[in-house]
Length: 164
Image (cartoon, rainbow, N blue to C red; front, side, top):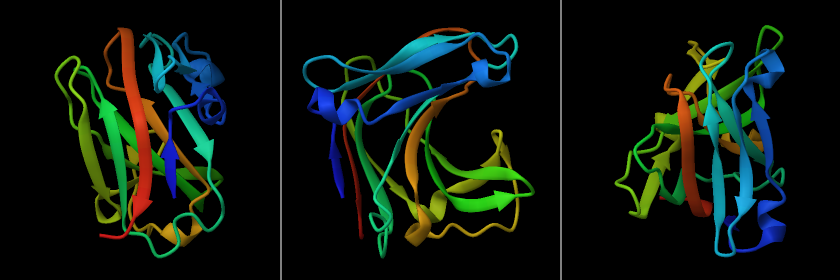
């Protein structure tokens, strides 16, 4: 399943989840710049400190797959890719996360995230003993929660899921 971010319709499938859900003041979200998706906003670490976007995926999109591939420009901040399944820890949803490499301003990179590198977490805190099951993925996302105040921008050209 390849998600190209080359149309406004494709970018419109993404939604924002920012720290306002817990009283924070960060802002951010996806937009189409005429060529690809841009995830941008401002992080405010007082009362939260994160901004994220996510999109639902078809129920069978990750079946028998082993890696996520992204084409991005991170421009000096540490973003994480997030995958969500039906897995829960108590009453909380688990997010399986892996960091994206930091790129130089204006530099596109192709990133491969093996599912074996995903770390289960709840509210950004790692948890133990939870297996990632690619057959159960229901959404893919990107989060910025690097502890730094200020504006951010991540350019995303494509996200693909495949076998190695």
